Figure: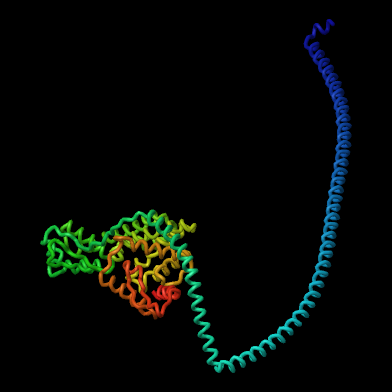
Length: 497
């Protein structure tokens, strides 16, 4: 101890060595304990892993068994369904075989009946042939007897018989015609009066028409010289640009624009009015004004066609048809505006179709387009019904509309009731007071032609066309035409007209 006290450093070194030895011993003991604990935990985890593996294997075995069971059940169900379908197919085949057997039996019975019927018909035909032979023999005997008693030959007797039969047939036909026509006429007149009266009352049209005025007023007579121009250059340029004739005469304050084409005449009238208001009249200005006016008139034409279609409630028209309708605004017939006339016919046709429980829209379409051919009849060869029918067919209109347009003047036979309706509506619109103007010469010529047709029939003494040519009074010779034959003569005259 004294030595240690005398050497403190050695003592400290010994203490450190002892502490280190103790630390090494403690560390070794701790590592050993840790290894033992890790071994135990590893054994535990291994046991748990083995148990988990057994459990997973067991569950997998169960799932495989369940899947096998489900597949077996599905296969059994499919087999059952297949067996059921097979049984159903066998049942249907068996039923079909039974039906075929029954049909075979029925056909066999029918064949047997047909054979029996054929035999009876053969016997019946033989009997009829024998009877016909006997009847022919008896007829020949009767003919010989009649010829011997009457003293006439076969040809003479046949002629007498035919004349007698013709007279009797004509008499019977006249009586039948009188009876049927009288009854039908009474009913038809009453119904037609009601329908037309209702249609005319519902169509409130003006009783005067607007004429196309081709006269242009001048502010002064000095303007005539400016219109003519130096050596006539202005008037020649104007006529060349518009395609119309300008008539400058001694009439004070008026220049007349003349042209066969109503559209060109309207363009010329408007262009001349603009030039007169502007005061600048020379060839270059004329071409400019005419070009501008042409565009304006084309716009007016399209707008007039759209307005007419809208007012008439006719939809789905082709763009070309709308343009043709607009051109009718400047087209007149006997002084009557053709566009206004077409709208009147559309309204009247719609009212008549409504009274007859027909398609009102189709009747209105037929009426509106019935005179569409007049828009180009001065450019295309042919009558306006034929031209209009071809245009309607080209633009995809229905056969009813095409026939109504082409046949409203009787040029083609009417294939639908709408053609007859448009014909009646056209006559009503044209015949109303103030609708049209007609020259005296044409009026008298038509009346004379009607009287000539009626006077050309046998038994007619005289005929008089009255009611502006809408009625013909016929006076017949009572010695040659009886009261019963009068109806037949009247029908023949009506058909000829």
